[in-house]
Image (cartoon, rainbow, N blue to C red):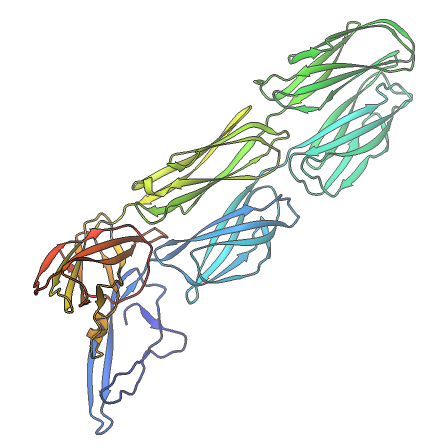
Length: 627
């Protein structure tokens, strides 16, 4: 009855033969109803004795108390273990831990495919018991952006729920650069274009096309690339013909790669002078140096050519040139060095080249590293104030989604006391490379309440932040008092402990564990009865103790006959759970016992708290009284 229901096809009754002057065990398999609420339940047992000699029967009812823990919950996080490209298998790590008060057993984790991710392996993971686990996963994501992975988690006997783990996959930045050879174009000429593609993170298959209205693309108009690796440019060549009937002017050449495009303007001029300007690298960052090459060529020889270079950036070298003679058909390259200021705002900056009063313009793309803080993972996210856990692990995950390295990267953690340095100087963070920075939070220095643990990341040209909430649960204040009777050498003393919860929260499943020593041993009775078995147990389960409640239990102790009179200590470990914490609270108390040469009928006093240790066990619930 109560919260119990039939387990499988098993019967809710049993029978056993009890020999004379003996006892027997009868097992009734049952399971807790999925609809049962947390708490204590009284279960009624109907017992019937039948005398085999005369078939006489005696029936009576016994009650037993069953404690049902709160529901099980799970915390999930999906962490990439390398580059992730949509459509290509990638590796992840599923970090799963338990929440709630009950520890799940017989756990089965089954990945489910969603619209954004398909799990390749494993198909199913079984764990006999789950506290925290890290499971490698191979999967294929369908697109960039927010990725949601679903997992079906079953535990105990067929209880199941579905939990989601989310991940943000940044969109890649694709840079397209075009270089022209020869540097001039006129009606009837053929131009070779070198197209350079670069990405800040791995990119899947790309279709590349070139469109040139008013011109004719002879070669390289279409190309298929299997993909791009981060920081590894891909070059290919296209050949464009300028029709002999083309009018002087500027002709746009459109290069498309996937969802990205770049327009290169080809200048067609029938005059003698041709000017082409190139910036290397075409994408710069604050504090970098750019080399600007100005290529002058002429169909006919030119005399007295004046060249000047100006820009909103800083020209370090080559701001002006004078050429007495520009030979026919022999290009001359002039080199200038331009500095990008450290504090400049990212954007597109012009470089003006004036040749004999006519201005030509080139552009430098100034980018700054763009760091995204993907999250702050707390392991665990909830603890008990003053509990046995020495530290909480905070992992800051970040990635540079920009086209250039982020420089002067500094990561700091605030909002909680950090063991060691709370600031980490990364220096340079390359594009597209995920980084995880671990910090250790001093759990013993945390008081009850919620703390916002914030991660701040700063770099040359920007900053970013993210945060998570750390919950510190209040710890139940358990006061222990005692009384001792008859503690003399060689005697059996009676130790009674009273545990009172002074608040502010309920202590669940309180257990006591006796620690053996050479002075006091648990008394072993001469006869085997339920009461005797209870008294000789070193593990006692006291159940739940709410604020203002107290529970007492008694130990029978055999005092060694080899010790002289004096004060000796008995050590007892108290362990209990609290709602919301995955780690139990543990305290060790020491009870001073006066061993006298004569009978000391009664000694009372408070127990002495000792260091906190970790212990666990199962025993019997004894008695409870409410204050």
